[in-house]
Structures are given as C-alpha cells and as structure tokens.
Amino acid sequence: MSSKEQINMNALPSHIAIIMDGNGRWAKEKGRLRVFGHQNGVKAVRDTVEAAAELGIQHLTLYAFSTENWNRPKFEVSALMELLVATISKETKTLMENNIRLNAIGDLSQLPKSCYDELQVAMEKTKGNSRMTLHLALSYSARWELTNAAKLIATKVKDNLLAIEDINENVIADCLTTKGFPDPELLIRTSGEYRISNFLLWQIAYAELYFTDKLWPDFRSTDLYDAIVDFQNRERRFGMTSEQVSV
Ligand code: FPP
Image 1 (spheres, helix red, strand yellow):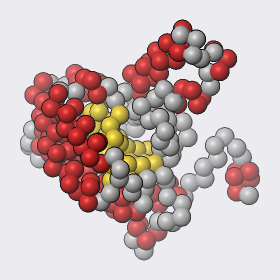
Image 2 (image 1 turned 60 degrees about the vertical axis):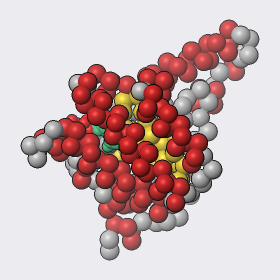
Image 3 (image 1 turned 30 degrees about the horizontal axis):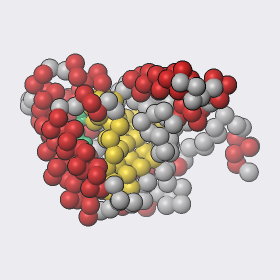
Image 4 (image 1 turned 30 degrees about the vertical axis):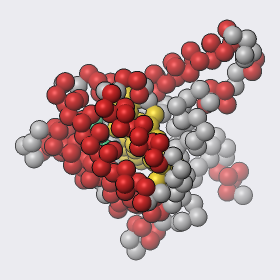
C-alpha cells in the first residue's frame, strides 16, 4: 500500500508547519551556487502545497526566511527576495484556481518594498479563499514574535486596558502573528538537522516533530504523506496518561 493510501482521512493534522532546509547543500552537491538550490526549492513548495490542499489540510506554514537569514551574504538575500516576489506573483493565479488563501507572518516591515507590495496584493486577492491557508513565515523568528507580544501586552497594561491578573495563555496567543489560527500539530524539518531554529516556539508546544534526511529541493508529496502516516501512528497524550487518551 502506498503511503497516501495509508493516510486516515478522518485524522488529518489541521495544521502542518515545515522548516524547509537543505537548499544550499543540495546545490553544492551539484557543484552549483546556493541560489540554484533555492530556485529548485520552489518546485518542492509547489508540490507540497498542492498535495496538502488536495488532502484537505487546513493550514500549511512554510518557514521561507528567518530573521537570522538577513545575515546571509547580500547576494543570496537579494536573490531569495527576488525569487519570493517572482514566485508569489506567478503563483497567485494557481492559488486562486485552487481556492487557497495566502497569509504571511513575520516582521514584514523589514522586507524590500517590492516583496512587501507583492505579498499584500496576493493576500488581498486570495483573502476570500477557504480550502486551505498557506502561511509564509518571512523575516520571522519566534523570539522576535514573543518580544513583540510582550511589548503589546505591556502597552495594554500601561494604558489600563488589561489587568496583570488577566494575562493568560489566550492573551499571549492573541498577541502572536498566528492569532486566530490553530497551532501546528505536525512540524516537519528536512535535511537531517534536528533543530527548531527559532520557529513557532510558542505554537509547537504539543506538535509532533518529524525529521527527514531529504534535502528540501527533493521533498515531494510522497514525503509529506510519509510524515502524515508517521504522525497518525503516534499517541498524542498532551501530558495525560496513555489510558486516559485511549478511552
Ligand atoms: C533553507 O535552506 C532554505 C531557505 C532559507 C529558503 C527557502 C526558500 C525557498 C524554498 C524558495 C521560495 C519559497 C517560497 C515559499 C516561494 P538553506 O539555504 O539553509 O540550505 P543549507 O542548510 O543546505 O545551507
């Protein structure tokens, strides 16, 4: 039986997040520049988005550019930004045809204007789509997001709009860029690295982690299916006992 056939369609994770890693190594293996890896990473993005939507996944979040990625060589940063602009502009039509909404999370004010504008246009065009939401994490880091949330909460307290005793998990969640979206249930990282790299630290509290040696440009729908099957074979206890969750 193929991994797709093994998927229980009644127990799909509602939100899958992916740390797309290994573009640089993939290109290096082929004696090419790192940018070649990013260009081929777009094919993996397309395949994964299509497969997730087809299955009925509600939310897919892709870690496309971290706050730390700004420290990469200037040439690579500009190439990545250009690739993002070109891809978003080219793929908006496909997103519309497939009823997929585009959302972006991160410190978007840091993006070059062309990239920021292209994103806004695509988000506006696709905002009524309901089959799946594709979240792109751009200039994102969880520590940035949590620091920002602390500032928002402190301001509300200072302005007497919130009492300290009323600060709870929901208040914090509402100050994050993922406000209103469910937490990821499955987090995938490619390229054989076993790290979270400052990604959705609050939101993945109970996510199942799945690591694969595949480099991102080689990741395809079958790899997504494998990860979902693995997820479905795990027992999610949320701090309870095995007996409690199996009743
Ligand atoms: C990590 O590989 C990948 C990135 C930092 C960028 C991901 C971007 C894309 C796949 C292109 C476009 C994406 C969208 C959503 C349109 P790495 O460079 O860290 O690889 P390495 O660890 O082998 O050096």
